Image (tube, rainbow over all chains, first blue to last red; front, side, top):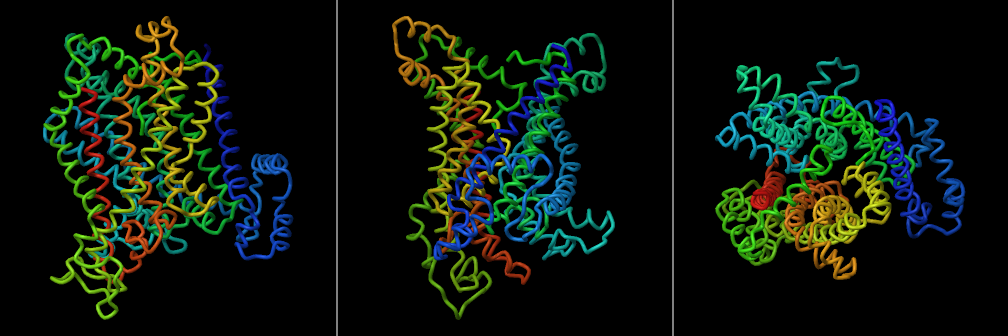
Length: 319
Length: 306
């Protein structure tokens, strides 16, 4: 199967996934609440007011028609009108997404090299106390909810030592370094969650590669330790890690809801959360769909990267 | 996260269980394998540490009100926000309630909701995995696509969406987490079933003229129990994580429960004023419970994989 056909195949799968996702999100925001007007106005509102609101919002039309106008609007970049702000949703989403990408970006830039380093070191020192410390610390860091570690960091670094600000939102017109300074502490809970996963995958991949036939061959043919590690082991060992990093992208965004709420930061997570609390369904649907697109996109890139880097995998749909 | 997500690890799973099946000598009965595994478990320090922490909180959840020195809901407006002392080991909150008692009793709700969600997820996932793995073909393709689409959203976001639409209640939390877990567990079980399907005992059962349902639940199920057990313990950790996060966001366990996540969300505005004890002990409680559960899961996993 040719490279282009393979890319096309993956793209097609991604599009099908996204389409199904849009149906799920639409169902969650339009069908599950039942009567949208009732949900917004509450149980004691007048039936005529509810009907009027439903008509005004267009939610009294047939579901298929609603879905069609919603999804075609999305494709054209028209994400609908927010119930809360009575304004187009798109600018809110765009602004929040940029903020979240800054926060997630800092966490990522820190965690990817350090996580891989942790895993590689653990694998090279396998079954020593260094290995055990990295594995147990990684496991413990990964499973503690973000708001728990975040709260402890706030207590230690913001209140007791006073080295970091309490909020993640920098003053207006802050420079790049000030922004990074404000985002550093909120990125730590995200860092902790991801560190364990990445280190774990890198460690497992390294151990597998270190015990493989090609590594033994490389050692036997007289290459130095350093050459074997750099040329043969690392490249093969880190392939599965790429997939984990992509999968965790989506997870990271879920964690943003909690971290952004805790640190009072205006990103996509806190936007969705606020929309959920206010029953602002157009905002909620658009935000969730955007998260899905980011996740599917990240996985697509990881898939292609994985296949491109792995000589043993041939592209294709013969699964 | 289940390992079957990565293309690289999709194949080793069936291969491993095939090996396990092949390496099962006639003399080793399932019972003796089980005994060996339990002995190995009891020798694993990680597992022992994990299960002790877990048991501690289970006992607190059951007998908490008998152990706690005060009633968790009793207010004392003359002694609000007092720091830890001999009378109140963990201090009091803004209503004068004893934080130590609330931490103890606060274990109850999360240890009801999270295990029930995990149980639901295991049952749904096992059925789903047996059917998709055994049927293969178009059923498998369609279900796998839908599962992929669902898993493109973080669990917390799916839960937020459904809870917003249906209203907040413990039942909603259990159902949404349980069904989402069902999809993930289903994937793992499916991979294990795919490895069993082509083995001789299935062919023999087919020749005897057994019905598909009988083959799935009587023949295959006992042989895919180990991965299901691992998946269940891992999921319990995630369930506690998710329930705690939802409660922190105000979408999970509701007042007046002394639930840990809920208590943190109610009190974390106070830490700026120096009242750290109204938050720290709940945080430590959540942290210890999730770490305990995951150490247990880690122990179970390493023994079953060995």
